[in-house]
Image (cartoon, rainbow, N blue to C red; front, side, top):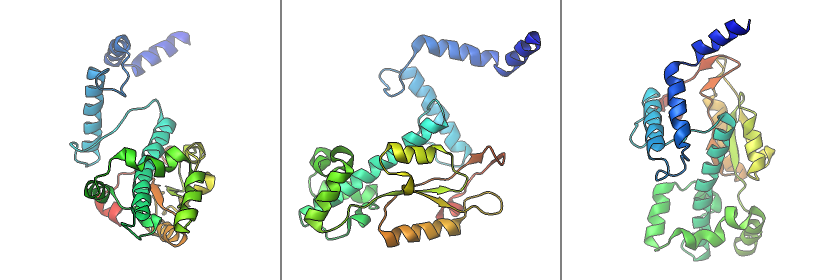
Length: 239
């Protein structure tokens, strides 16, 4: 039995993969820094470009990062989405405070990078100028008090829109990043187990009514339960 198991494992772990793994162990590179992991970063970029091309995306602007597993990857996705939302909100606070805008903070939470960069350039701002208005730095409670005192407005509480077949790590991520499990809004699935655009639209409309910024929309590309891989076209995403 042990012999058969050993032979079976030998079939799974190909010789080339083992050799590559052994070679990378000698470098033990930290892929967080290209300077510290020149070869590893190049391999990661090449693999990300291959994956982007596989799903029909332009490899040139595609960015990605390999992690040790799906849960950690989902945590990193929420961290990056929070980073983006925090920058846009902090800019909105600065503009409101300096009487350059009267738009609600909810609108600035969705302003987008082009508007963000244009406003930063127009007013000669740099990221350190926005630090006092960052909920990530100052804390959500502090910014909530700030919004009530200066704008007579509640601090926008973001939500994550996820499909009904979401991974259990999404509510965990919401807790870790201080959003709370209530911030994870589930969308219905269609009869083929795919995210329903109609249900998604309903949750987007609900977020608008309640003034809850949409931090991110999650789509499951493959599920263990159904054993399928779902690739979305740009038309489906637009819908």
